[in-house]
Length: 67
Image (tube, rainbow, N blue to C red; front, side, top):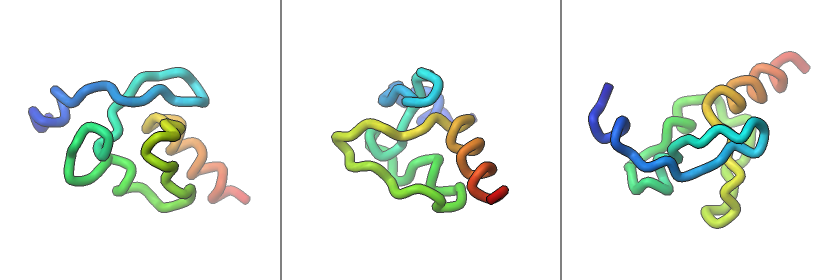
């Protein structure tokens, strides 16, 4: 694993499951992990802090594709 990703701070709490995870943008990275996923949801404002964790965002994307 890329060392910069491993050492990135846990910056968010998922509103769906409560998992703590790192938002790449909030952690000062050039891009966030979510940028590699289909753009199903709008990215929340930086101060909103309501991003989904990787697992929950993948579930939301899968459910959106099933409609």
